Amino acid sequence: MWPVVEVLLGISMLLTSMLIHSAGMYLVMHQFEVNWPNYLNARNEFRRQLYFFYLVTLILLTHLTEILIVATVINALHALPDFRTAFYFAGETYTTLGYGDVLLPAGWRQLSLFIAMSGLFTFGWTTGVLVRIVGKTYDAQFAHLRRLEGGDDKSNRTSHTK
Image 1: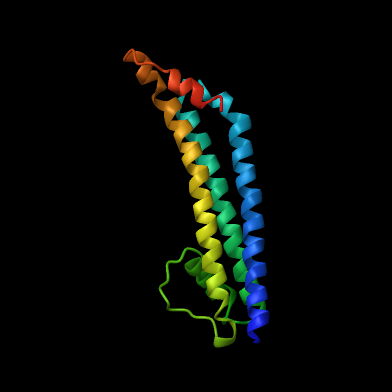
Image 2: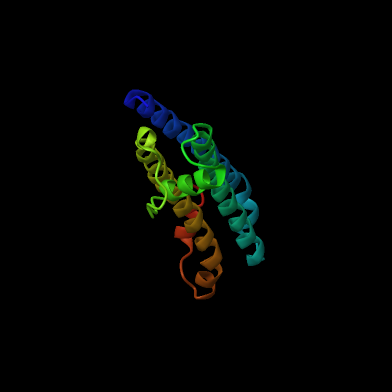
């Protein structure tokens, strides 16, 4: 394949992945901000952790959707023998695991760079979202301990109003 076509397809795949990730992370953060007040003062820690699990599942589904789309493109190009191999390759490259046991043919090899870049960008983005959610969850989880110990809980209250 012509390198220009390969690069343009790679850029298109990268931008598509970023668009999907943007929608997924918006959904996660929107769900979190809208529903968090219901869980903030909940005495049932299990409910709060179950909600956290739900949000992490949404993040996982976002990443899997991105991998699925990349695998579908690779399969449509007939660059690998079957969809299963394409999905494995897409996941391995997206996560930058890099076993190297499956490679694209020479005419499509540059796509690997764009798949890896999309994974790096989106995992960094996911990390930022998780830091926000985990921080607020742990603040709420351990706020009652700080109150029992007579500690000042002011920092916890202000962090939830931002």
